[in-house]
Amino acid sequence: MSDLHRPPLHLRRIDPTRNMRRFYVLSIQPTLFGGASLVRNWGRIGTNGQSMMETFDQPGQAGGALSRLERSKRRRGYRDPDEADTD
Image (cartoon, rainbow, N blue to C red; front, side):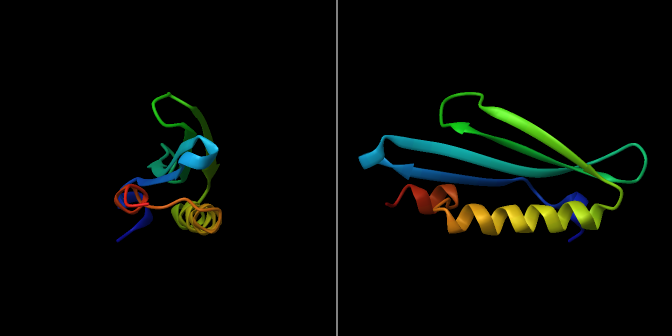
């Protein structure tokens, strides 16, 4: 599957002992000039949170950045929504 057609990645980090309920969403959007933008949204579950967009000349570069961020977030305890609800 190409990076431009990858569905958004939704992650959650829930820790009731620390009153922590966070979300992180990563998606890739095409640009008008053949590149791609990595769009990040994060914040507390139930809020709009914050967002950031980083633009790349090649879609593959955006896909690589998404993969690096996904690994980083998973190391910090973020999980897929169906996994996070079982804790």
